[in-house]
Length: 294
Image 1: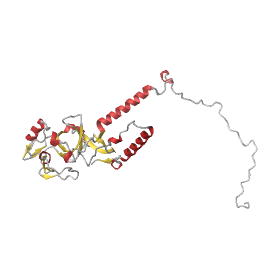
Image 2: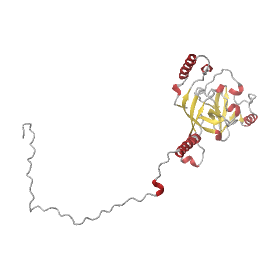
Image 3: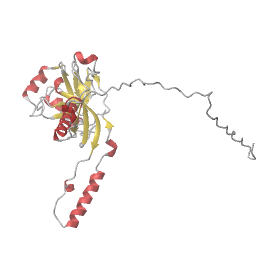
Image 4: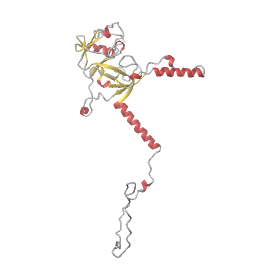
């Protein structure tokens, strides 16, 4: 061992010289040929083929995107905006909703595969307005088929029992008989349609309105400001589009002064634009965005 404690390297062994006792390896006279499998020839039609990155591929990608978007909007989810105060304070003017269109599926053979939900009392629904199906309304289900509905001094009774409604508000102290004591034989405002007036009388028994089959009685949470089933009738099952899923955007009503104009000097325009942008930023209801609707 050396001074550092490390072992010395082994001594180099002398190289043996060739002698008669060591035979050289014998090579075979002829080596067996190695078989190499060549790949099949490329068809002439594919030799110069390259991925299509031109306008045809762009159009195909665009069509696929459009088809997916149409499918999603038609069957799964769709965006809506709240235009009126009829659902305050649950939904406010300026709330933008994503509506789940697959939640209430049609009853049938697909029930075992897709977990469709039944429409229940208290659900918020988006539906096509029966009088004008091109318009969409958002209301809360108060009565389902077979229910007996009655309002006494603004209190809703279903099947003879008062309905617990922590979401309902009343903005007016005055009592309007047709609106707040419904139905009481009063046909209400002059704009009440003749067909609904006749149906209202026909389906009223003992001061209670009976909800017919495949129909729903819907009202807004802001009871004194809601144009709902009391005024135009039931919501047919086939008119129901879905349920609001979440609020993805919410902004307060715009003040007329916030409308940008081209009047004044360049400095005035810039100052006015900056001021309006600031007011627009503060008008956002950040706390409501991406909240579930219940």
